Length: 489
Ligand SMILES: [Zn+2]
Ligand SMILES: [Zn+2]
Ligand SMILES: [Zn+2]
Image (cartoon, rainbow, N blue to C red):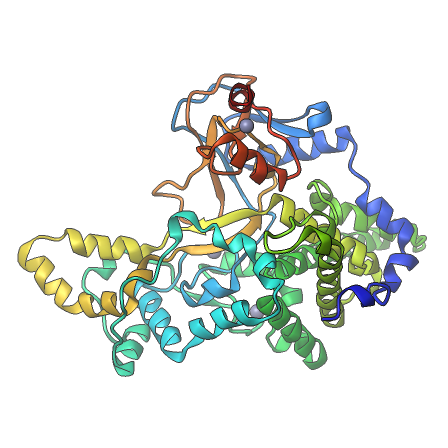
């Protein structure tokens, strides 16, 4: 990519044509709109008593409306948009809507070994490692897998292909796997063989809210389908964040179409003459509302400068990022452009959506039942264990250290993203045994009193003061929590 010299070549026609609409879309919502939106949202979530308040200069914050004990669930937050990392798709088969593991223990193990055997994993790793140098930085948020991380210390002992296939296809049953039942996989109604679901309900919801525009099955029609495949390939090879942005756009278009259809029907009933064009834009604004609530800046302006980029090259680095976004947007436009929602396809809006994910992006993590399964086998006694392990040991050896990789992705959680940071937080994101899907779960780490602000730590709060401040600078603020104030002096 030729960076600095081409900066003037990129020009998005839609930015100019729809500048008025774009600034309406990007106008921060009023305090009243924010309050109404979040009051409504809190009602639909599983939480004992929370309130979102706009606290002046610091923006939004989440406050307790009742007391919480240590360890108590503070909030379960359903994501607005989320996606599994493309490289993680080899490791786990999960519902494309709720991210629960699906199929069976045998399918999870067999499928992973099968794909591993085909070299899919290796190919994907190459794709993210070898392409342009900026990739290190663009995929930087992939390395904070925390508890899920796995090193390649143990050597894998491969199994014969027939053994792998017979487990994957369910011809062979592994001992005690029935103790870990998983919902059977439901195919995508569009027939894409990319998306699978834990239930018909999830399949229908995903279709309604996101997937009907992004399905690569036959339903799309050939030219769009090919364009969409190109878009996905580009996102897989560069940055998953583009796919999240596509889902955000797709859901906005689908919400718009739904309210438009309802309006047309309504007008028909009242026998009105179809009105002016402005009414359509107000519908688009309404459909955009959930995304308008998230704090956002242009991606290329807000992305942190990676360590290996010299500050003197900052301008060309940011221009490269902008070009990459433009490239991705062109592919998406070819696939799903909708004239009535044209402003959504401007580079300005695309950049802001991606920026919103960059700034608020939260880890989507679901623990693997395969890990539980092998732990269960390991806990068996005497002959039972011996008999079971005779069968399971070769699979464990073939999987190596990576047997317990969890589902990993990124998601935007509307309420969690309103929670402010503290280096001495009173809550944390924590999945309990029963939390088996992609929702965010926030637990109190000490007792929280009514009216107290609920805070989580965006970083490892045990790091020294200086390191914490440096990491938090990437989030665009200087922390002045009680701990920082104390350690500063
Ligand atoms: Zn599901
Ligand atoms: Zn599909
Ligand atoms: Zn602090």
